Length: 224
Image (cartoon, rainbow, N blue to C red; front, side):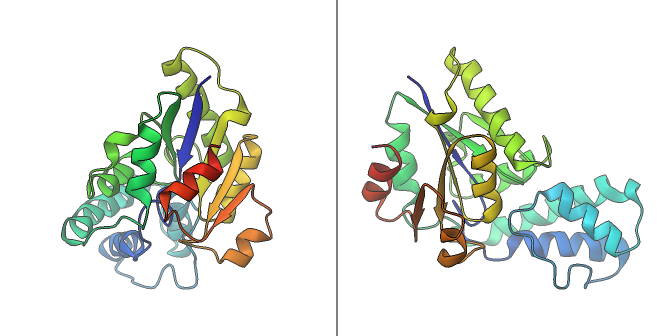
């Protein structure tokens, strides 16, 4: 039996310290000359393409500017991450080590980041190599569909279908819990990013944690 454990990135694996927001805002400043496009707009749980399209709408820009803005954002992100301190949240590396040691587990990503953005962020602390499958914001703007895509990819490399009940989705926002429900996966919420514990509890996830630390307790709960 194969089990698939999927992780969101921002606020789940890495600290939400504003790197992505600054990088996207900088892209809009360089292209449109404005620095207040995203005033009052939350990025948590959204895909990179959705954020950029929303910014274009707010700036009265052109749809054909999307790729230019995306590339400017990614260039900014690479520079921001290069000079940032460690981005890992507490317990994350121990959790990944514990899961990677299990022959029945495939590790994957479900994230609103485009693939290049995810790689930039995960390479900072060298955790990119843990993940054998991934579904990204450039693959679909619907997070639930990303869960299904990651499950199908894991089934291909595992040479057998994976039952939805053997899929675990870990994230820090309402959208992550909703995506898990859409994919009929086990929903694990961690209050380390965009939502309070109370907000997440109201969604009734299968498991709810303040943090992944200590890793032993987290692992015992999600994969008994």
